[in-house]
Image (cartoon, rainbow, N blue to C red; front, side):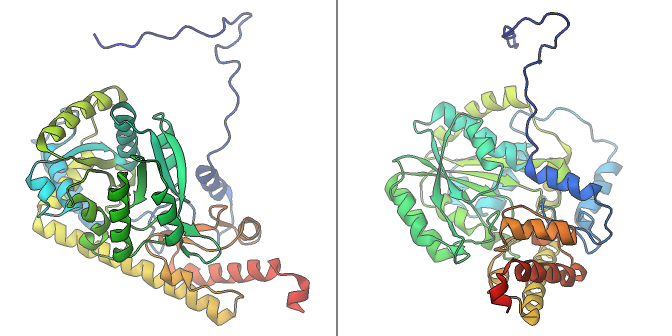
Length: 426
């Protein structure tokens, strides 16, 4: 029988006290606190560049036309039901997701060495992978890039794994600290887990080149490290799904093992559907079969089985040639707009003569950019211009419309000028 024995209370309440009397008020989660502050702000010119959602020129969450088309088809299918999915999710979704990630010619897929399970978006894909490693892997240390996605430490440490960091981004030069990365991974604990962003690094927008990825791959294999990829922006970095998966495919075809958490929130606009997958490349088909059996035991007490609607949308798009082409066309248009907005912002700052080098805006890729602004300058933007963003200076380029770029450039210019010593201005 499946049930968990209730824990004994740590204190017995008296005089009508709550069982939870001693609980302290948790601090606000920064990114959601920023959203709440934005929503309360009555200023008509306010901008929200914090949370990672791709928005239209009108500031609305973008919904793919191909997704709307598929949803209409699904709604008209009167034969469909709402039966539970298997613990590992929709089989066809898993098969197509693995193919999208590793490529149709993947040796690992052909040899049945890839296990893919549908998960609740990228977050639970990471968490399920972390739970598996905590239970079945000898090394419990995970190296995260510095900086990384704000929820990575929460998701991984919640499984009981120990966190360390490796150098990734140089805040002085605003580029990849490749030498620091190699040094830190070269001295990492043997067998340690290393988290990589597959493409469109969040929060910096700075990615290694293909040549640098190959050096990283060689070092990881030489040191016996276990790579764990987080892939949330496939197609939004280069505009090409295959190119954006190259880092993963390098590891997926070299005979070694690796983990990949995949999300369709950004590249299909399915944020609220919470649809993603976890893939594990194993040494042999027999190991893959055993790994899948253990993943079921991890998923069962977490959420039992995943939801059906998001998986049905993704599956319909990935398996139909025409729908797939419409999707990739929309993805390419979104990526091109990101590049255009970056260029427009860079040109605006240059034309204003804003002190500093702003070329990082056009060198960085994907949905995010590290502006190089400090906390005081970010506070200035919020206070004086009603612009809401992360305190570390990260902005969501996908949330910036072309018509809002001049206003944002004015704000950055003012923030930079206001922070300069008076002697500099004289």
